[in-house]
Length: 93
Image 1 (spheres, helix red, strand yellow):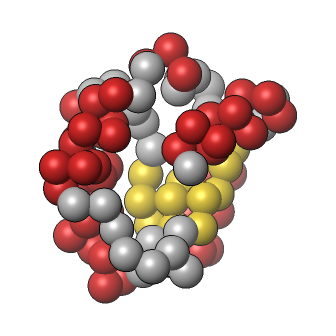
Image 2 (tube, one colour):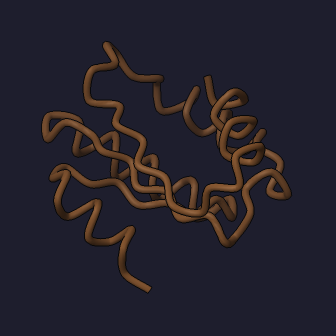
């Protein structure tokens, strides 16, 4: 799914993306998430693309870990629990 996400974003020329994952059932484990993020080629994540991930409030711990481990690997995005906040962030300069 992650590979397909990058194919779509890079192929579309989009620079602002809202990824709503609230309906996804289950989440990767901490180890699986860490490995996934570490295996992402940084060149695949252009710095001019802003991604807001919309997550369920019940997944706050996972969202925080995902955001932190991704930032440490050079992959930048933000997790949000409120759609309007996510859109506002995407619209900001």
